[in-house]
Amino acid sequence: MRLSIERTNIVLYCRRWQETVEFYRSVLDLRIEFANDWFVEFELSSTSFLSVADAARSTIDAVDGQGITITLKVADLAATRDTLLERGVDVTPVQRRWGSDVAYLHDPEGHRLELWSDAS
Image (tube, rainbow, N blue to C red):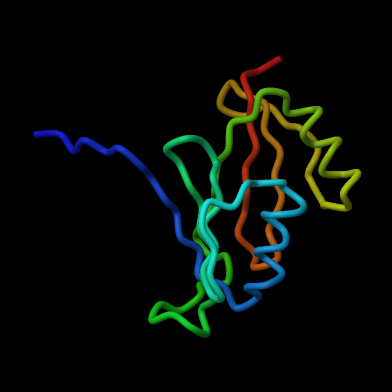
């Protein structure tokens, strides 16, 4: 039997919790689905979420961004990159990889984000 997954949520445990929450809320402009004083859940799509937890208040340690890449497909990579640059985010130039266009950035905790779209 295959798993019947109805909803996904990635949880990032962060030492720089407030800065990381602000990054996803204000810089990436993600909608908050749930929040309390140590955990914020952002909506990526109707069934996909990304949460930021304060490592100082959880039982799981932060990994300082090591070994994690969050990949996000966007409709228009060039426009997304331009918007992020205007917001002061350090984003790599667009590159061609695996038959797609990609660009990379990091959140304040050091997690790598890969933005990609179909090759232009």
